[in-house]
Amino acid sequence: MKSNDVKFLEREDRTDEVAVIVGTRPGIIMLAPVIHALRNLGVPHFVIHTGQHYSPAMDSELFEDLDLPKPLYHLTGVAEKRTHAGQTGAMMVGCEEAFLERRPKLVLVNGDANTNLAAAIAARKLRIGLGHIEAGERSFDWRMPEEHNRRIMDHISELLFTTNEKGAEQLRKESVMGEIHVTGNTIVDASLNHGEIAKKRSDILGSLDLQPGEYMLMTSHREENVDSPELLKNIVEGAGEAGRRSGIPVVFPAHPRTVKRLSQFELDDLVARQSQVRVVEAMRYLDFLQLLMHSRVVLTDSGGVQQEAYIHERPCVTMRNNTEWTETLEDGSNRLSGATSSQVIADCVDEALALEPFSRKPYFGDGRAAERIAKISAGFGMDI
Image (spheres, rainbow, N blue to C red):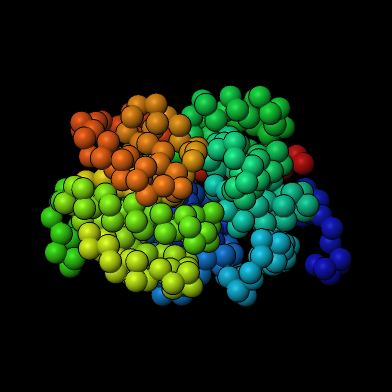
């Protein structure tokens, strides 16, 4: 039977392979420990890169830095799609074709990007097992595409790997059908392991003439912020005001999406007037991690960067109205500033700068999440 005639795979059609889905830089970083764990356990597996966020040079550097095998499949033409439906649909088709060719027993997705939703739906329709890593996290903000994605994936997965008991309890409240496993979050495995590599390989502080603890680090890429001229203006002005008040420069590795929006919204001159904001090009992950580990305060709208700031015991200001990582709010290491007021952003930075040094608690796990996920994946049956 031709593959385009197949609606689903019978149990006997599937192999013992595990498919690992990546498509964004955060996803590659967080799944790197899982790929290594599968390899160490001798579990047959392969990687599909959906091409959601794709820069050939940056991707090859990241795979090289993290000692990852080249993806077996690399979808093309996805990043050029301008809508959620167009992008997700293209990735669904590409993933389905790869699944029909390789016939894995299990597909692993991580987080909440469109990449993961596309692969999850393609796997579900083919009756391939689905494992969702970082399941059960909720922002409860229905405006966020990521919130839609994570909720859908949690309700169609056979295996749900949660960061902690909070996520597991949320899944139970929602009466999900899959098996819930509290494994910890792979971001801990990744950030601690990669941090040690960064210490040996990265000279970014020397290259940028920075001293440890004498600068702040800022990232902003989330579409609800950078696609709004008003909110992006507030973020730039808030960083500038925070730098002026404290006398501490703000280093801003600008995401390509953010650079494009700054130009489109004619905010380049505003950025240039912020004497304490230093915009630099997007950089290799190990360099970014080195900057984060030695920063005084982190400003971000990224979920992953919030976690890495906590793991490396850096105070954080989250330029959003909510966060999935409420534990960091409860212990005071993170605070929500939103992006509707530059003054509120600067005020939150003042509070973060005044925070006493803290030691991380095991909210996100003990650094062995990938090993647990790989073992559970290896033993996954195909009774679906």
